[in-house]
Length: 75
Image (cartoon, rainbow, N blue to C red; front, side, top):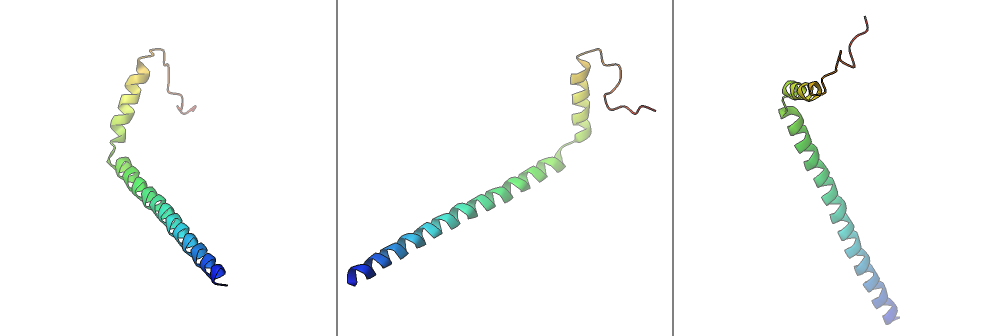
């Protein structure tokens, strides 16, 4: 009976360590996701999108044979 009690105590200790470890892993993943989201929101709002569009147009004009924009209205 004593050995059975020792085994149960050992198993309980091992499972509680595993549970604490998994809580740490999931907690770290959630915090990392939150920090990544904050950084992406910051970068998105700080970007000058009009300047980015101008740079993209310059790159496209290097090809030279662009007659009209691809998404132009067909009125």
